[in-house]
Length: 297
Ligand SMILES: C[S@@+](CC[C@H](N)C(=O)[O-])C[C@H]1O[C@@H](n2cnc3c(N)ncnc32)[C@H](O)[C@@H]1O
Image 1 (cartoon, rainbow, N blue to C red):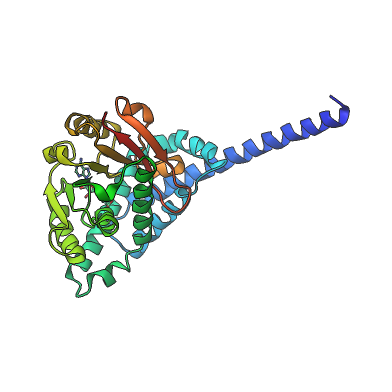
Image 2 (image 1 turned 135 degrees about the horizontal axis):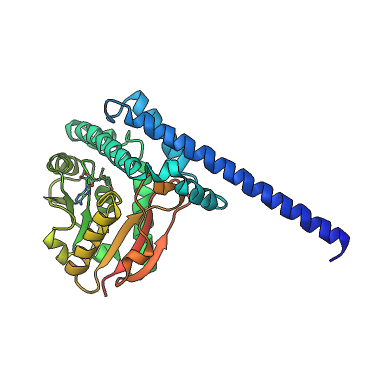
């Protein structure tokens, strides 16, 4: 090594140590900010849409939506931070509750609106749903599965505003079996689905995702990110789908990666043993959820 090259190497090492230190600092800072946002959300009287709740969730999504490059190191630092490990379950619960109440608010407006499509156009995350369902459709096509040829598609954990099912129907025109365990979500979701798509496009069922027997007749099943909030609940659902799906049926599992794991539960590929694993997509754009494509062998 020449002295010059040696000096270059030393500078590089110093620069890398500096980068890591910066990364470390930014992980610590981010963990503190996420923990503070979580505590503020927890201290609200409820998580229904309001200027304060919307602002807090907006900041949380902005912090966690970043993706890629050094961020995966930063995400590991944040996810390992004790202030986050002790709050992760609570974070997922708060996000699920906030999403449910936001959907409830918009579903009531859409179901009651004289022009439901115009009302839907005001929903702030409409484009994210459209992009996510288009990604899923194209991902299936990458693996030789043509979703518009399916006779039955089933969506598990559809919510009071069943936008994933609505967007899938808009793209594919395949009738969907839509499942939610909450009676309130089923009532509002079916009213909303009928207002947006007319009768018969979405068939709503009240059931837990782990107990819905007719899933056996589906060609394609989508497991919503919030169906089964913790690892144990998710594994129970996956185990039941493994028992029920017929060989050749395809399962799309929505998950999360990087900092987005603060907002939604993530599924490790090791929890999917037995399934034929076709692929995983981690979007780097505004789409928050990752998608895992599996086939029942
Ligand atoms: C807030 S929604 C989000 C889905 C979103 N609307 C979509 O279109 O992708 C999540 C829904 O999952 C439902 N859910 C959670 N766990 C479930 C389970 N084990 N079985 C069925 N539904 C479940 C909740 O009741 C809630 O309505």
